[in-house]
Amino acid sequence: MTKRSRIAEWLALVLCAGALAASTAAAAKSHPAEVHPPKLRSSMALVVDQDTDEILFEKNAERVSSIASITKLMTAMVTLDAQLPMDEELVVTDEDRTNTWAGARLRPGTHLTRAQALHLALMSSENHAAHLLGRTYPGGLDAMVDAMNAKAQLIGMREANFADPTGLLPENRASPSDLVMMVKAAYDYPQIRDDSVSQELSVEVGRHQVQYRNTNRLTSHADWQIGLQKTGYIAAAGRCLVMQAAIEGRRVVMVLLDSAGRSSRFADAQRIRDWLRALQRSGGAGSGERGF
Image 1: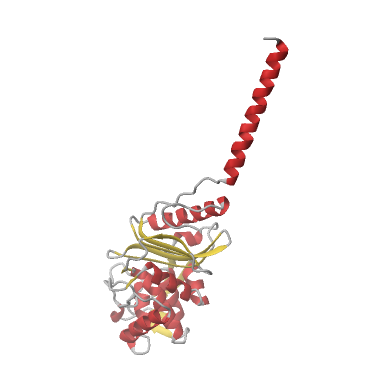
Image 2: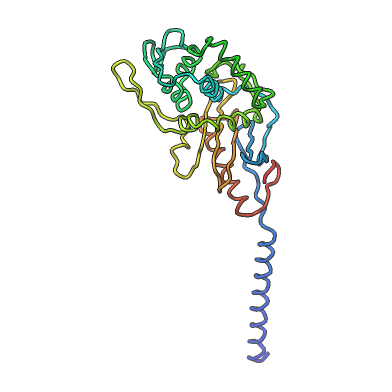
């Protein structure tokens, strides 16, 4: 083979390789790689577009389970619906004991405004504060629970039941679909939005200032845009989390229930956000669980 022939052959191979690469790239662009849904440690999950109600992700979303302190979102709504004075001073008493006073930061004799009690119940999931809101509700605890169940029916929570304002009773139950409705309803209350995502609150207990912080670590992450949130835990419910957040400019409601491990609900939220971002970038849809 002459030198000229070898050069011609080499040029042909280069051109062929270039054409193959261009063809592969074009195919990849027209057929983006499939983005698989995340593997979650939460037993139940539901993610919905807040504005269109489109289901973006679901896992065992038909189940009804205990919801722990997610209950406090309903406690907050009926408290605000009653138009009670937020600056009224309330006093914690022995009646506000939930499980035990051992380790409690609020003690009998502590003075709080109703606004402070609401803030602590939403931000730090303070059970004594939530009970205080129920005890001082017009008609007392029973009247508040009745109002909670009536509100649930009003906003379309068909399988929900509320038994107390703290969420400590396992009889506080709902489905993920119910909780999406509750989060969307709670989002209409500016005070609930602000209190639930605030970072800290200092309260005078006796002679000391006690600092409370948010139970949801994601609220302190600058890369999250969270408009409302609530955490929860009792043994019957597992670790729970509900949130409203903006992801890639899209407003979503996220429900995660019965998550295994102290941190897994927050990790699951991160996995869902990463997955939704990947789907947005690819323009594709997931496989298995439903995606957009």
